[in-house]
Amino acid sequence: MKAWLGWIIGAAWIWGSLAAATAQENTANRPATGSALVKLTPASLDFGDQPVGSMTPPKTATLSNAGATTLKITDIVTSGIDFAQSNDCGQNLMPGAACTIQITFKPAITGPRIATLQILDSDPASPQSVVLNGSGR
Image (cartoon, rainbow, N blue to C red; front, side):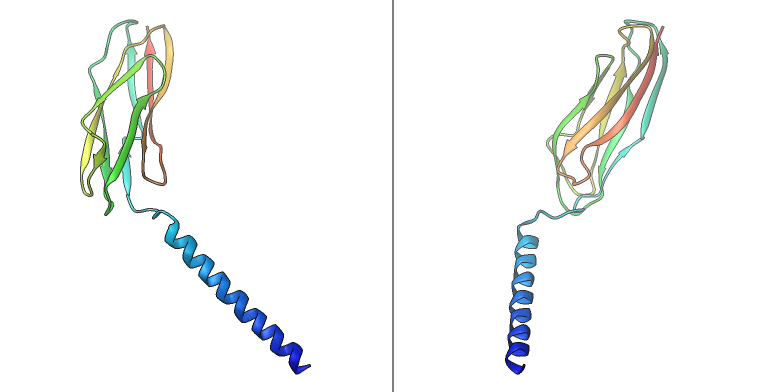
């Protein structure tokens, strides 16, 4: 009985050591999560009614990095053909920094137009997005 008990305790110790080593290795090889606290504001932009084919003045969205690491920006895009963007964000957003994204609306057809502005970046919650609304008349 003592032999079995010794074997069980030994096996449990080995298994516990292997599990701890595996967890430590997985943590070491995993990228940090939550390292860049990214905010994209506002959550939505409404451009109202706009004559088909004419462009609105730009509206602004702000991307900010409240984290301790640099945010790597891969792409900033709008969906659909009615909305366009320009920005001053670059490829890296330093900790504590912010950049602006200017969005315009030029409806191609009449009726409600809905799209999204998306920022693809290194934050674990990527992509961040803003809902874009407008209507062509």
